Image (cartoon, rainbow, N blue to C red):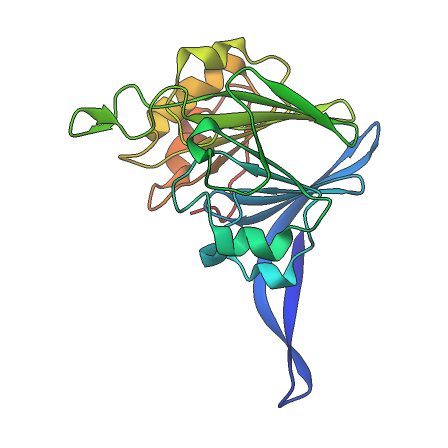
Length: 239
């Protein structure tokens, strides 16, 4: 399913398309769950009447055209995940911002969740889980050190969504249970190869897997690696 956000042009008095986004919807015990695939690591999740933005970044969308967030989740401090300009456009007085330890002092009024902590908001539970590198490093240091960044498990209406953030196939993924929908990153040198992503998925067996944060990685490689696994791989425009 596709959705279209437009902009109004005063000169022509017409509505022009800004960008077309793919959108998937799911039924839950608390109403519809809709995920809009903004791009790269940016997602818009509508859980019933609650609007959740994940890693909103101006490069991926004109956020002045998107709905204000009730909840905003920031996985870590890198510029393709934390963008103050986009945050300013989608936050309002009631918006709850949840961020990782690496964002401390970088976002006004943010609730910092360390790995393992959780928060309940508007009938939605959000748990911060580890996201880090083991193999991929720069000058001997991991691109994403352990404890700095978050993945998030979002629970709503009997559905559990795992947004991994920037991570490799870390051992803590085996502790994830009953994940209905997963987003796993797949690009080097910052996150995972298709093989690492497939190994990560097999460690906790989500029902549906969306590769995201892909860069130029060919997602068909992941599709082929997970054939016969009972994991449904859905490819969306999330480069």
